[in-house]
Image (tube, rainbow, N blue to C red; front, side, top):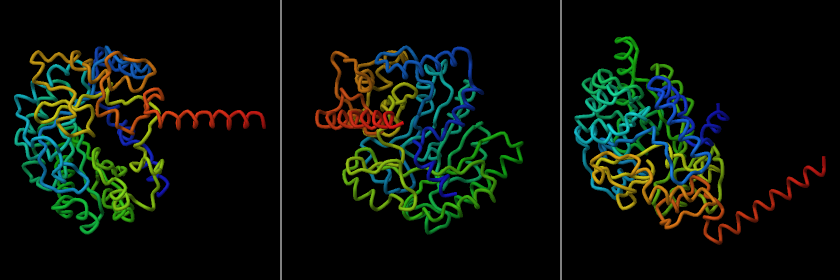
Length: 388
């Protein structure tokens, strides 16, 4: 049991969702969408700066307001750096429509509790009507029978419920203002309602962030999930807000002790499969993130409006290609190739440690360290071969 969870925590979270993405590709695929998928993945592998492929996953945040005060969430910490608001149904449709020919799924969430937006059910239904799969994440605290019925009626395909604990005590330390018993009851009610209607959806996933105070409750959580009939419980690594300052202190307070991460260094305290991945950033090729105000972030981890790469209202004609190959996106992709892009600007991506930048794009002090590491690896490999 412990080894399985350790393996999950050492895998970057996006890769643990491949089953969900695979279903969306099959169920909502068309020849045009599949061709774009192949092109996009080829361009990422080739580390292209200017791309012809289009994003095939979309984040449209309906609401960046939340009823909880989670201490590692920018929204809960009141440090979002963006005006809090609701996305209108009209904007949702207008922002979604240009993506539809290439889109497999839309995530109707990001920095808030989506159920607070009274238009959420119409948003989900509209996306489904356009042959786009729908995912939503919720803490499920405010959910009533009205909300549970609404999710089923709208055709939501995948619901992630955030519950980080297996009893009231382990849950409330992080999910401040939450109600463990209410959330568990809401999940059970949703399963009952879904099965009563033929069990078509949504697929219900319990997402459990493993932290220092709740790591001893993971087996208990699995038992509860099995008893209720949840489709899957997924344990994910704890992450720190992208721009938080006191990272070492927060890591000491929240990171688990029993389950070890993939890496652990003084320079990179945000570990557990989320640092220094040896590949180009997939967000810059696969997904576009649109906030409640229409601002376009480079990924779902970056939140402040001053970091935006563009704004949907700058493109009333919905020209996705123009956005996708603008100066900011190309500057960010250039971090992962030896090629120089004339006029490259520094972006928020220059400070990211999740994906491994090309050595030539590292600051000089880090470049020397990387070069020395590569030389050492070559020496070790040569000695190993010679000794065989």
